[in-house]
Structure formats: structure tokens, C-alpha cells
Length: 270
DNA sequence: AACGAAACCTGCGCGC
DNA sequence: TGCGCGCAGGTTTCGT
Image 1 (cartoon, chains in turn purple, cyan, blue):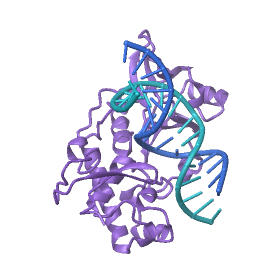
Image 2 (tube, protein in one colour):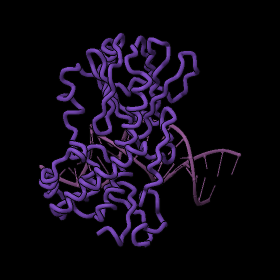
Image 3 (cartoon, protein in one colour):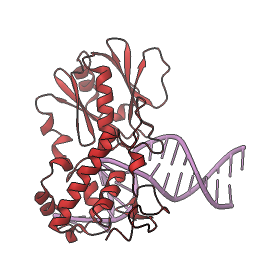
């Protein structure tokens, strides 16, 4: 569930707590999270310090001395910082012991998260960041239009595609389409230049507001590190099935688009 | 080539 | 109460 705003909130919070701490040990209890060769991972992360944490789209990028760790939280990945002698939860899969004997623990109920390691000098050219689209705030609107206007996919599917634009997930794409007054099922090929531009503007606006409010906290995603988002108070359509549209008062319905649960105001969104 | 569906996992809420 | 089932979601992989 973490999308760009939640990942950004995690980034900021984590950085305050672990910047310049050295990783002195790693305990990997569920190795499938690590998508790099395990020996390479261990030898290239231990004894390096966390110099910075960056973010691209939904990826967290831990900048170490000579390497970077690129982490995707997928649906339920979280980080916790605990003391070395605290009991290990069954959903904590990777434990980094830091040089002050605190531990950075990766927690993931669904075990869908991923972790890649690359040398610091070429990580932008390596998978997975090399195939990532720009974030909405950096996306050229005309490029976006040209990229999608031959596609027969519904616009929602296109906007969820991280190769085209990065950062949006199911929550923010529903909100973006509502703001732009475009129906999620509309084929990308039917989107005009003006609408393509409106979509990028709406996505940029939604994401920046959500970052400002610390992300969205719904359902199980009660965040890591006590991070409590407040954007759920700003949602217009997502999770609002059966409620009234804040613009026209028509009932908000839930449908399935691109295989995803989708909330839409059928009167406002055409 | 380009799209949709299944798979990856687990917990939860539902109906019986 | 307890069981099985479907659903949820981000992304990759498989199948058409």
C-alpha cells in the first residue's frame, strides 16, 4: 500500500534516526526478499555506513559508502528501529545491526518486498531504477501524451504503470482521475493532449498534498516508526463506496478496472 | 506486440 | 466456534 507519499514519509523519518550509522551485522531470516546474490549482499553492505536515504518513485535508496541498497516495500513492507535484545517478530525478515547496537528491522507480512544492491557509481543505470518512469512533477506532458495515445489500455492501468510514470498506486490514481474528471475505464487512446496535461497536473497536486500530510493511513498500513499519515481525511473517492460525491453529491461506486478495485463518481468522471 | 491473468504471500472478513 | 473461500495490493512473469 505504500505509494510515493508514504515512502517519502518513511524516508524522512528513517534518515533522522540512522544517518551515518554503520551496519555491523545482518541477519537475514527470509532470503527471498534479497534479489541480489546473497554473498554479494552480505559482503557489500556489512561495514558500510548509511550516508543518505533517497527515493525514486516508490523505491527507497540507501546510500552507503560504496554501494546502494534499493528497496521496494510493495504492499506491506515497513521498517522498525529496535534494540538488539528486543524479541524478533515473526514478520521481521532482515535485521541490520547498527554500530550503536540498535537494529533496523525490515518487516513485511506478505514478503513481497524487494532489495537490490548495486555499486554506487552506476545504480541509476541498473535494474530496477533504469526502467522507472519520471514522477508526475517531472513528467513532460507532451511525452506522456505521445507515450499513451496509441494504447488500448484503460487510463487507470496506464497511470499505474511505473515504467510510464512512477509514484502512483491504487489510492492516488483514483484521486487523480477524480480531480481530472476522467473515468478510469476510458481508453488511453481517447485521452486528449489537454486531458493528458490535466492528468499530470492532478497527479502532481495529489502527491504533493499527500507528502505534506505524511501520506495516507488506511487499513493495515498503520505505518512504520509510528508514522501517521493524515491524507485519508482528504480522500474524495477512494474507499468512499456508497457515499456522496463531494462535488455533485452523486453516489460513489466501486468497480473493477485494470484488475483493481476502483472508486469513481460516474457523474463527474467521463 | 500488447494486453489480461496468474503468481508471489498472508491476514482478514464473510458465509455457512 | 471453525472452516474454506475470496479479496486485497505492486510488480513481474506467464499465457493468449
